[in-house]
Figure 1 (spheres, rainbow, N blue to C red):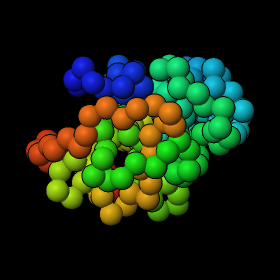
Figure 2 (figure 1 turned 90 degrees about the horizontal axis):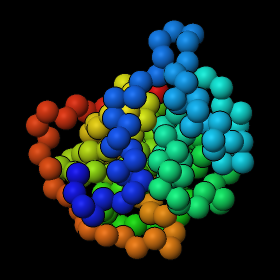
Figure 3 (figure 1 turned 180 degrees about the horizontal axis):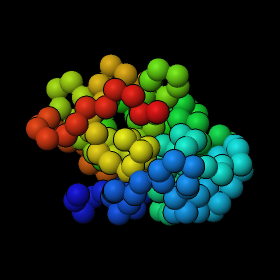
Figure 4 (figure 1 turned 180 degrees about the vertical axis):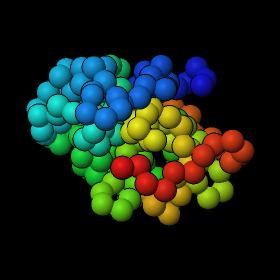
Length: 171
């Protein structure tokens, strides 16, 4: 973390370790995010943390930071983030960029915190059923976005792969 991290990434970092509840139970914190965002942003009535929540996590962190989400219609769906905000080139990424990935059966969305030669390091929800930092293959990335009308501060962050697990399916 550094002083140039955008407010939504700071909010995300504060939630590291938040987990979905085991079995049929639900984490009230995650359901509270959904309640505050509502159907207009999420696109569905979200009522169980067993429903993929990576998009919900991204929307929650952006909302906490005061980012306008009125243009987002299906925020719970990871791939809906691929057209939200403004595109940002891979060589202009900065911490807090929103990265969208392909995965078997759908997509995944998370915040960029850095990269190594082959993987992006992302902070996201529903990564191992919790908020965590994981490495995802760059080749899986289908979109790089930044909130419209918000200036990008910083640039790419080069990291080593040491100690950061690789994710292959964020379902």
